[in-house]
Every structure is written in C-alpha cells, then in structure tokens.
Amino acid sequence: RLIANDDDDPAFLRAIAAPRRGIGEASLKALGAIAAAKHVSLFEAAFTPEAEAAIGPRPRAELAAFCALVNDLGFRAGREPAGRLLAELVRKTGYADWLAATLDRKEAIAKSASVDDFVGWLSRKGESEGKNLLDLTQMIALVTMLESREDGAGAPDAVHLSTIHAAKGLEFAHVFLVGVEEGILPHREAVEAGNVDEERRLMYVGLTRAQRSVQLSYCRSRKRAGGKAACAPSRFLAELDQEEVRHAGAPLSADEAAQQRKTGSARLTALKALVAR
Image (tube, rainbow, N blue to C red):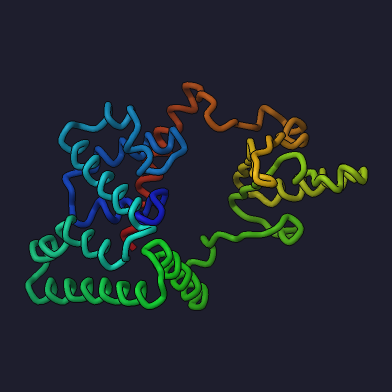
C-alpha cells in the first residue's frame, strides 16, 4: 500500500513497525508533529529539514534507508513485474528473519509460507492480466472496501465521491470541493446565461455539507487543446468570510503552532490505534 500511495499514513506506520527498524516512539512523535504542522503525510515529512533536526542520527539513517527503498520500488512499480518487486521487498526488509526471531518456529514457517503464496499469486495474476503492482494494489483495495461495505464494517469512514447536486440533503464530517474556479464554479455556461446567483447557491450547498471542515482547491492551469491554459480562482472565494479561511502554506500564529504540535501527537496516537486493530 505504501509503495502505491506514499500518503497512506496507516500503511507507513505498519511498514515502520514490522519488521522493526530502530525508529522509536520519540522519533515517530516528532515526525507526526512535523506532518501535522506542514499538512503533509508522514512519508513526506521524513524528507523535511525539520525532520533532520528533530530526529537523532541513528533513527534518521534508518528512516532515510526505509524511505529510499519505498521510493525506489515506487518508481519501478509501474513498469516492472509485481512478483519480482514484492519478492525483492520481502528480501530487503528481512521479513522472514523477523518472523523467525519474533514467533515460534511453527507459526513463523506458516506465516512465511503465506507471504510466499501471496507473492506467487500476485505474480501470476500480474502476468495473466498484464497488471503491474500499482494496478494490483488498487484492485485489492477496491475488493477490500466492497467487502467491508457488505459486512457493514468501515462504512462511516469511507470516502464518497459526488457532484454537489447529488449531495444535497447529505452531511459529511469533512468535505473537499475541487475545481473551485471560474468556468467550473460558476460554470461558464451559467455565467454566459446570467445565472450566477444559481451557481452561488450551488456553492453554498457544497460548503454546508461539511460538519467539521471544508477544503477548497482550484487549478492554476489546465491542459486544453494540446496546450496549457491559466485558470482563475472562483469569484465566490472572495465572498467568503476571510477570518474563517486559512490559505494553504500560510504561516501559523504561535497559538496555532502549539495546537498543531498537540494535534500531531494525537494524530499519531489515533493512527497507531487504527493500525493495532
């Protein structure tokens, strides 16, 4: 999962924890605080100057080696056979040795055989269907999500993709509105027809679907007709109460920075609880 998506924080923590890599609780807490302050994943936070300053030399070296392995396999995942990459991953992480050192002999042999069977299955499926590791990871994630929905587990935490029209009457803890730019919201045809007020109401509907937070984004440019066209932020963004808006990348106040440090620790604790289930 981490090779396919390095923004996957639970996968990052699972991979760090097993086999153990000499990266302790204090280092992970520091990394979690940096990730929260910068609004980035744990993996991305590992490459920041702040991480280099906050984490000791030995765990920093282990973290760098781990991230380098993930980067290398991720770079190759789209073009090399899945079975070969997974076999290399198991070998380079010393997973079989870790099982032998932490479990009794019978259980270690059984788990190691299960890993070998899984690698073999993915290898055969990749070859027969022409799928690489990224394709197979996405397929497994989709099957897992569908199975969890069928048995009623995990549904509240699922991501829902929807148009604003289809979301009317619904509420979500966190909402992400993408494409908040001129030509999309408000739509170009609505502007030309003089129906900007209707588009403004649609924007209001989108904003009010959120119970806790809403994040708005727009493109600076888009590819059109073989070229690149500049995009303008939606006029509706300027109509928002700016005291309630935080722009990505803006510096934090001292109080906000202190709160972010607390949030980082809480975030790491929550993620570890999720991983431990």
